[in-house]
Length: 207
Length: 207
Length: 207
Image (cartoon, rainbow over all chains, first blue to last red; front, side, top):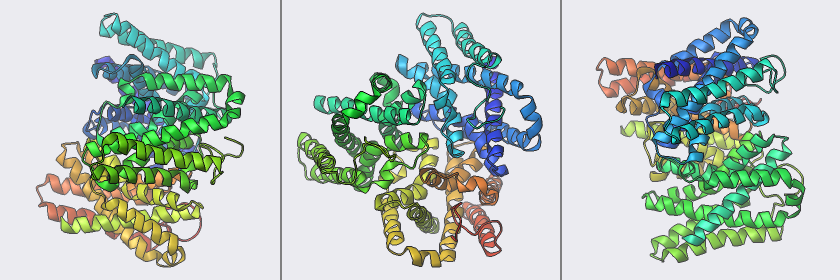
């Protein structure tokens, strides 16, 4: 679980960066940048916990996600141009986060005795709702609704998790396979330009 | 309750169709179509359960709503033009769903000991929040905010439910009266073009 | 607590007015006006209670917030022009509400054993989420994301609350200091035009 936790923090940081970058593009001020960073990083996990009834939600008890969002906001505010140049590094961190978020969502769902389809949906929600709220706040149609492949990858990772889990495979291997599937597909999609150059945005321009 | 459950599924299906149709109009891909179908079908009920604290919410434990949304998405994707032509059939299913959703919302509220006005509001939320989330995701001002009559009908149905319930009328009759009121007013509104030709949309064009 | 409760109702009323006024600007009908008034008044407190798991949320058990929103909607509908003219009175009521909302949010968070940063965030959420939902429903980028000072004030008030509380200061004095700080800064900002003429709107024009 320590590896999962590290990946979770890294992924949250990458998600926060994508929110901060969109906020800067939209000419938001420092507080707007923080809000977009924060909701992108924690929107999926918070929605997951609300749907499961796991309250107080983690953002209130684990302040590290708030600090991660503050750091990402300041970095994006100060080094916007440099960040855009290391686009592929951010995309990789984003991919690691995506795979991890799917796994955590499905794993929490299974622990709460939900249905097969419900667990897959909760993994998907954990992975994509943060980006959806980010885009709504920036007054754009959520990018994920326009890009099938991003979400289908998360659904695939969730199905792999539930299938392996139901066959009694040890949890470490289940997580590795599911997250690995999502991360590998994302990296391939980025490497070979499968339908997207940009992380989390439907505006024109790089990243 | 079996009749209510059938109407609930039928209404969810009609709501899902309205979401899928809006997604197609907005040039979304298959995943975007599914998301809009799904949130329209389950957004109201999920918000209702969250506000009551009834978790894990039903979408995680009852996968049928996920399957209904998948079927509605595929149907809309494959037979968009044919669906537009049977507009009035969809509008009727939508009306049946609306009446049912109001009843289920008010009934759950009363079981949770909320106030009179709170119960009416929860019936309204169950009926309209799915459509509001659908319109937000499509980057439109929610249609229901521009169309008084749709929402007023739900409020009327909710008030009838609480009044009859508080006078000790048997529940079957209460539900029949309340849902019947909403369905009848909706059907009349559609038949005589009371302020709306379209189910759930503020774009121009039929449906 | 009676003073806090009075300020809470007054603030909810001012927030409801700001929602109703935006709805009228957006040419919404009476129901749309009510919805925007209602979500602005209760959106922050409802999100706070959901995140804490304090359900059924207060709007279902305390109908007074529904009645306040109905009255604010009718007043805005009937006396729109007059309300615009007493802009500064509404701004003052809004400032009183803002300070009170921050205090109630932080106070509930501390009672639920959340982290320092979590408590400050919950105070902020209680104060600003209603306005954010209002702006989303009106299809605008939330005004608070474009106006640093409004939110920074809430964060400052929240930090003061937690710091004084952790040093064992009596709660009445803590609340007075925290709410007083927010209210004073808001009043000064309005008086000296620190970055905003408008209460809750990013459209051009007064209020």
